[in-house]
Length: 427
Image 1 (cartoon, one colour):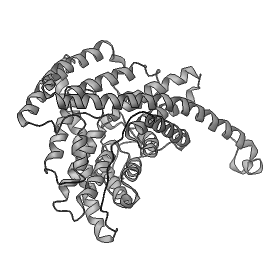
Image 2 (cartoon, one colour):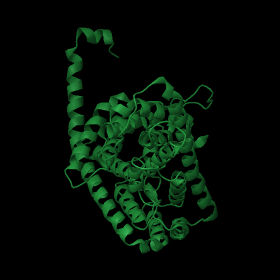
Image 3 (cartoon, one colour):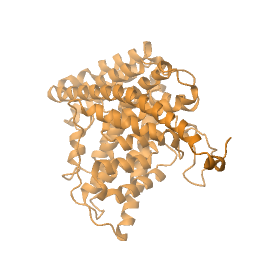
Image 4 (cartoon, helix red, strand yellow):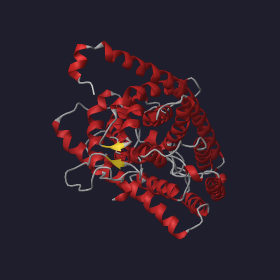
């Protein structure tokens, strides 16, 4: 190994490989980002169409059991090799075995669109990430890349998918690096991750796609008196994130225990969801829930909205329907923050913004990416409130995650006795 001291005497020796490294990943970022950005745009346009159609024809929700059966059969006979979804991407990052099958992309696209069309409560992040990773991993063979580039390729896929579907390129780039190992980040992949995120985001905006806009009108000047309330909210957000992760896991275990044949799990789950939706007389808690998220910044919501969304989403995903968890987490966090305004002396829009990203930070163990996302979405004025809430939620969510295969690189506190490299689901 050549030491840094030697490089100080021959700096040009290092510049040439760095130049080649940058050019290589710039070319790959343009190629990968362009394709994934286009795929995300198609996905978002399709998602808007099915959401509008469902809301205009709510009777279609009664077909959710049939949709669930179709999804279950599709994954059983065609998608068995990609059924792990996001966890499969993480496992391939830790211990590479084989190229992620391209079929993951169209299957998760199909499964998510069907879930939303017929009334399941799910998100879109999981779809974007799986599409991105499946597409990006094909370039390793196409460009004959070496095995050492595999992890960077997967990071590029996750970064491009996340950035383009949410319209937050910097947060997407950091999320892709931060989510891979709890407490550890790969800085060597930071530049490629940012480049591909920017490309994918830009390409996605070339299509008639409109990312949801949020606004925090009133942000009080930060002072020490607010620290207690911010930390208290962060604790509540973190505990809620942990509760969500455990709920999804418990419903998954419950369905697997009592319904052995996998395709029947979403079938029976769909029956229950359809009955409950018609019993309560609202579609507020199914789908993405964007209208309610927007409303949390402008008006006071029912205090229990976040609880019902948590239950609907955990049950939907546990039953085997497809989609992501992140947008429902945005709903849960924003609605919870709105509810906390009943006793926390901060504007409810600010609390909604804090919850929006902090619950997500706790559920995915990505506080830095979520703090950046909050700043990208809501502006720098709310930055200190958002950052403190995200970090506190990250700590108090414990060693749990919506990604059960996530590995602990650095424990969150000294009392955690599991060794490094332990998976979340091994606790």
